[in-house]
Image (cartoon, rainbow, N blue to C red):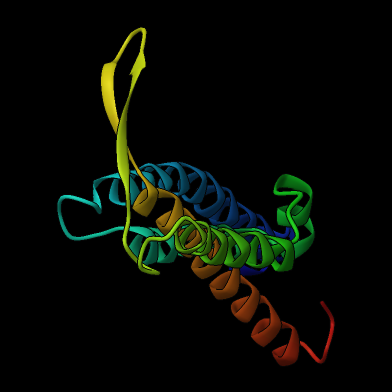
Length: 159
């Protein structure tokens, strides 16, 4: 019986079935983790969380996809250069306090205002949210880039 299954390629079929389950589960869990990451990002001003923790969860969800699929497929799905994400995040995190400093405020003093949106009504906008966005992008990009570069080193330098 075993030899018949081996001749029929059962081991190969079984591995492919596991990959399908892993890939489907990874896609669903990716969306759940990303939604929670965004929730932590927005809730971080009033409760624990914010840009750093949200960025780590965002990176963890992308790394989960990298485990389930290979890097080429993820590169096709997420057409993102993580170095550029890091640069944009650093620029936002430096420009926001820098602009406030140019307007005569101490460097990390944040300002807030309220804007009116038709469906949501008045919502507060803090400059800390934009600073956290820079931290979120920097942490997520740097973490994913580090994991990709470490994995490329393990595979003999193939990126």
